[in-house]
Amino acid sequence: MALNLRQKQTDCILRMLNLNQPLNPGAGAGDDEEVYKILIYDRFCQDILSPLIHVKDLRKHGVTLYFLIDKDRKPVLDVPALYFVQPTPHNIRRIVLDASNSLYDSFHLNFSSSIPRPLLEDLASGTLNSDSIHRISKVHDHYLEFVTLEDNLFSLAHKACYLQLNDPSAGDKDIEDIVDRIVAGLFSVLATLSVVPVIRCPRGGPAEMVASRLDQRLQDHLLAKNNLFTEGGNFASSFQRPVLCIFDRNFELSVAIQHDFRYRPLVHDVLGLRLNKLNVQGEKGGMKSYELDGSDPFWVANGALEFPDVAVEIETQLNKYKKDVEEVNRKTGGGGDVDFDGNTKHLMNAVNSLPELTERKNVIDKHTNIATALLGEIKERSLDSYAKKESDMMVRGGIDRNELVGVLKGKGSKSDKLRFAIMYLISTENIPQSEIEMVESALRESEVDTSAFQYVKRIKSLNVSLASASAASRSNIVDWAERLYGQSISAVTAGVKNLLSSDHQLALTRTVEALMEGKPNPEVESYLAFDPRAPKSSSGASSSHLKGPFKEAIVFMIGGGNYVEYGSLLELAHRQQPVRHVIYGTTEILTGGEFVEQLASLGHKMGLGSSAAAAAAPPAH
Image (cartoon, rainbow, N blue to C red; front, side):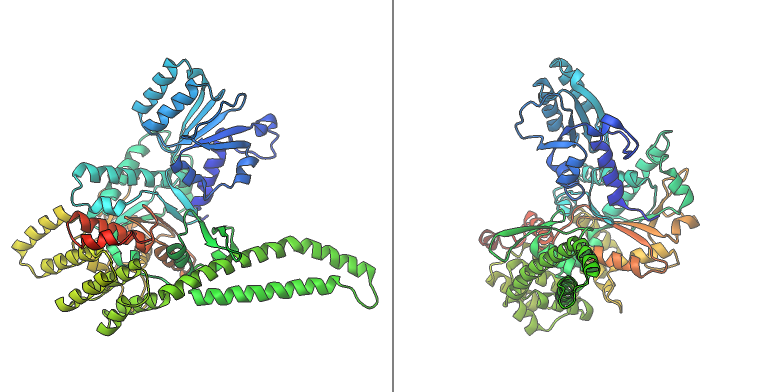
């Protein structure tokens, strides 16, 4: 049985909506199934619910009203209130206020992660002092601090993680807090799946910090008798354990910046897909809101296709739909000698096929509108040209000077041009200073803030210095660079050579494949291995079970992921024989423009780039 994160998290939430009673449809639960309730959530938990539960699902589970916790609400008596919030001081104060104001008869409190003892004490003392503790029916800890977007895709929804981890002014405590938050999120994912994986990661940087802390947290937790992994422990004994591969965004920076011409990444990057929802201009002027998830067969089947192929597929589906409608009309239209029995049968079949035809037409209309909106942006910004030229640059390791200037002075938004310039910087090994100045001048001409470009240039030059320095001075450069850049030294250009393999496969995908195969491979030889189930886990342990092969992998990217990597990993899983299973997760899902904004902030923090241009240029979207 493959790991299905979306299903597991949905089951946990439905059980919570059932006041944490087991869901047992058809077992004659009597009145229990007819309990009407009110749902109160905070913004973070709203984002958890949004991709999983629709309004009709809430009604089906007895939720008649739902509100944000900060909204002013009127008392509703005789109905239990179900709270689903993060355990924060603000939320605790608000719950105490609601209880003391007797808003509801009974409060069923559900926290998205384990509530710290001090906050539990605040809740107890607050409700005691206001004589409302009798209203608190139940307090439940959950492990749901992550957002599942598809069966194999999740995000911890940690904003600006790359910026925070690489911030030159960040202290040790700041970095530790970020790492602890990531570990808590990954622990939630593993607890929901009921699996204890083998953990692999490259040496150094955030990836090793997260891996080693997660290993320790799992080990400590497994010492408890009633731990979260004993219930689902049969999975570990009857199936092979998965491998959790942890990477840091600097492992392959280019993928976070590049333009991509496949449908799923294009919709996300250009139209701003968020929590599986997006708004596009409708045919008659108004905005239309669409959902794109596993329930949309066209999105599932064609998300990985290049945009022109998607347009052809929409046309094909439309023609097939028209043909099927004509067929129904022909069979039910009669004519000549009427065969009443046969006609009645055809009419019944036609009536039965109407819902399916209507649904197909809705899906075709939806993707026609999305494709039309994309086409407008592609033409206006020459996005096809950006995607092709960046891909060629990465393969060839450079670009003709005139072509480079043509792109920077041609069509495209400020963000498009900046991303292209950074891709040029990453893909080209030795760039003459005159060419760098020419690029910067072209960017300034378009009023582009060059801070992000300067930041990547600075890291790249450090990498070159490091390679050519003597052993003694090298350690000084490393010390200084690590203080200044966290751990990003040498990481920017490391991913470049990886991309030059014959099949142009992403370095991430190739590395995950090597880790899953478990065969000797120089690329992953130095990777650390942790086994939380081992009596005393030792990094780099040589036990054979730590090296695989593995049928299932959870791949986690610290510092921001994207639909390009997700699509590449899905492709890897499907082309394996037998088919393997890969789940992709990240601290947050970012468009190229959003990631470059974080690079620009780092550039500003280091005093790089043109502040004048920054004032003139609004943030890229």
